[in-house]
Image 1 (spheres, rainbow, N blue to C red):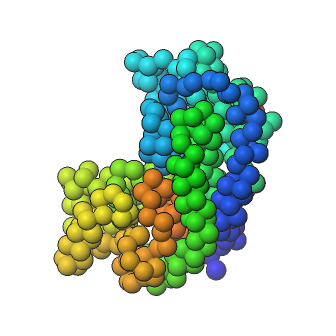
Image 2 (cartoon, rainbow, N blue to C red; image 1 turned 90 degrees about the vertical axis):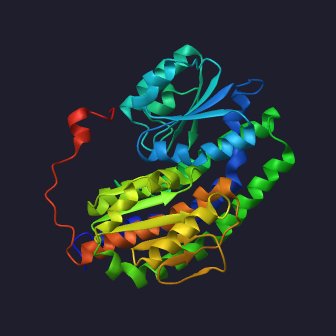
Length: 368
């Protein structure tokens, strides 16, 4: 047993909670979004801005493709560092801003919320604390709906944030007439199926990881690749690997990966993990994986193709095969992968590093 075994087990339990949390968000969506919908009745927004830092920013990237397609409107994803750049060419007085912070205390996010609200934007504060500074500064506060998460490594809160961003946008789309009822019902039906299959995918992921952990522990860097619509998921998991086992990890869109980063595989301690969506770039990703395995390069994939199960290098998940909803299928499975790796490193004492300390304290990133 490793020195952090109890803590890591708690984080894995939070990943397991993705299942009931997702089901609860879907079941309670009308009630959770009720006050927001009442406050925006009759309003017409020209664009949506999904706003946050770190995992909250990544959650925005995950749902951007869904909301753009479903609502047929511009959806921007930004962090506070990008705010000034965005304002050089855009106005936000007729925008719907969904600002996410699980704690509701992100100082940089709150500062931007104040500025955009003063410009006339309608601000939804998406937070786990409805008494937080973010909630109090918002036009309407909405609960992330995932319960307490006592961990610096955000897990169930990431999927809950993405799901709530999606639900807020879709409920607005249906209520405002931007989205046909049939299209709304199709998406919600697929999300219900994803929630129903999630536990099976988590169980498969644990078995697949157990079969590979000894090999994976030999690698000293990981690259994660996907189609462009899934980059929010791979960015999030690369961040978690760096946070937990302190290994260099990066995320690339598949075309970007082909133009240089793949050369890292010439170092035998570097490995590749790809998300293979059957909806977008499936043929390209499959060919890359097959080619690399023929060359004995360390390539692994999580794919929606074929019957659910796994081989040494491939995990085949249960899937509704709706590319716009891939984030809800891939994210929990990848969380199992990253935390299983973390648990293995901790148990075998492979994560000895001298940490420089928490930079958030030096920069005062949280308000009281």
